[in-house]
Length: 202
Image 1: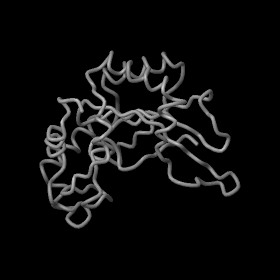
Image 2: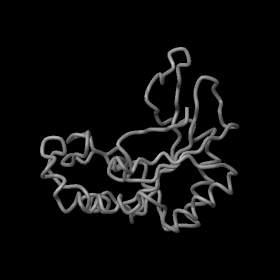
Image 3: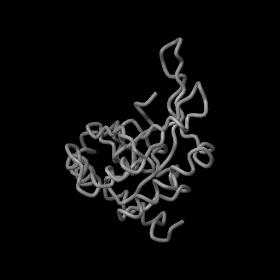
């Protein structure tokens, strides 16, 4: 793990934005009046209407490099903690029954990013998803490896962002809850990015 992104350092960042030992579901009025929640809300609200210059320049560089338009799946009105940018590459679709989406999450509360591939399986007869979008790590290290490596290089060459250590993403922070996520389920992925994997590309 990057020594500058130790578990204790990241936990200290998280504690600036989420109150400890207050249930969002059961104590919501108290929760939303805390200094931590107000700090989180202010940052998200600030980013809701337009990209800052650094993120706008990064978006342009990625779109130019890959010759595509980024799908913005961010839902800041629901208080996602990141910009959720998604990309569809027709040449990387290796299964007729599944869609693979390259996702880039840029945290709004710290200079972190996370790159992953979502697998989406749609039932055309039933006209619905067969299951919720889910991460496919095998595809990330094979079919999409070149795209991910290029994307990571673009980010690191043009911003101060660092990739969050993979081994900490799913670690639970036991004394924090947020929205529908109860105590004992809230992870570093939830803290810095979103509540669950999602995409509009099917």
